[in-house]
Image (cartoon, rainbow, N blue to C red; front, side):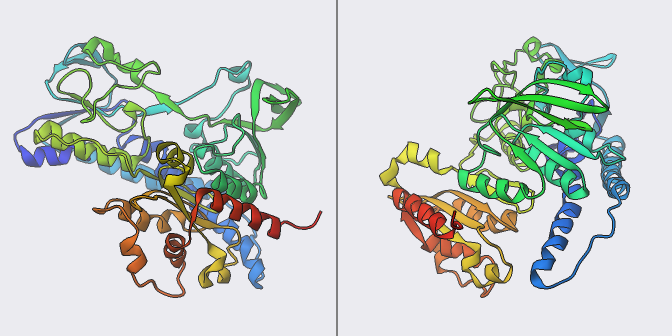
Length: 465
């Protein structure tokens, strides 16, 4: 609907077919970011309640009504889905098809028993869960991020295959609800998409409530003595270990759905992985056919899909020539604590500009008055700047409210000079937590100096052996 509504306003006589094999609203609403965040807020409340004891507040969680939490999530989501369905079904300009579409020829789609043609087609086909080819996994049975949202009873224990965003967030939720969670990731770094310093903080904090295994390859799954079991080998030593749990959750990322669409019949090319190929304007290899959202496999975030729909609208409908710009794509991990990032990681910046061409701004929450009041130990803001221009090229935060704090850095990256000047000159409320952002922009190091500072801090703060 992000692109359909303005199209109809632009041309009230336009007729639009909206085709969706799933419930209306897309992955974000039906089984992605929105339902998961509805569940993650109660998990945050659990951890906050536990933390209150540090401040002399005697608290106790008497019980957690898992069924009520799940029912509330589903009722909120169902309400939104029904609202979108009614909007699609009642519009005079829209023919809504709850069916699967597939190309049968260029500009020609088969939808159920109907065949329709159009010279303007938008592919917003989403993605699907990746299931790794693990021996015995199908026979043992498993959950995906889709099935977790349908749970009515909390599993006593869960073994999570995967060590990225989805594994971290769902593992955090299940552990906060009371499950015994073990995460088994194949990458040496927990949440490898994050800066190593961010991953270290999340691994330490989440590791207080669950077991996190990294650099492990799951070789086999099975069942015995009433439990599901994973056999995992260390990718460095080869040593194997078994993880037993009531349920297995597969959280190994998402893959393309283009196979259902048969884009090759429509002259639309895909890459070797099955993602739709697009140019810098988001047009596919077939003129008049455009792709956005998860379809091209670049950035699988709803906020990116919203942005891409604007680009496609400008190009396909208004006939402009707007290039897509991904220089400052943000994301957040809604665990406790949160993490958030935008733009380049330090490694990427060093590759592009060289060590001597990069500056790193760094400041810890606890070194601000508000952070100290919150007992926010070891959380931080890290900002990456191109030295020559002082452009902000990346930012990474680990700590409470990271998804909020990072927004002013994102906004700065969309100003004319993309620099820190306006933030440095601004008057910040004292003592408010967002002072940590401004101080990171003032507290700048050369790359080698930054890592020396980090290692020196670590030596000072490590307990004696």
